[in-house]
Length: 242
Image (cartoon, rainbow, N blue to C red):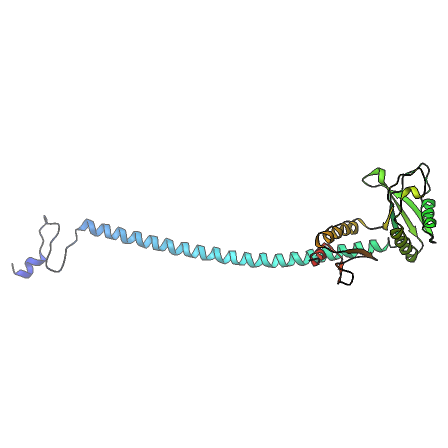
């Protein structure tokens, strides 16, 4: 055979044949390479599918995040509106109490006449007030039940509050057998307003505010005598006290 023919021919017993430039690959290795190629292609296809799935999930998560953000905005808006309405309702309720005061510290007596007791207090304070009605209400501490007194007008109420604060009343000033305990006369507040006033006073003490008082239905605070007045309408307003 010619040289070229010899180079191309392989006997059946031979597995491989080398020449100067080329290696002949056995058939079983060809099958292995084919299987490997198919495996790589399969993995590549699976990876593409995985990428597609991940991209879809990321897209859905982005959409959910956007929807969640919108819901949070809506929820905050609704929450603010609800708080606004609650404040309005409480303000309306407080306005119905604008001529009333609550008195704490007067001992309970048998067959007492609450209206007469408050009239006696006004006489001791040397002021003229028209008491429309007065009655006791139940509190958590039954031994310290409050008396609610309704006056005919706001001017009488303010006069009573001012003089009571100035005179610093004691129970035994009115009856000798009464204890020497303080009598406090304050605005008659709704439960919400009373809690807000308590929180305002506690925070004022913590932050060094000297003045906390009621003006109509509003709670006002001021750090110094000529300082800026802060109006506390709801609990969020307490953040203004820095």
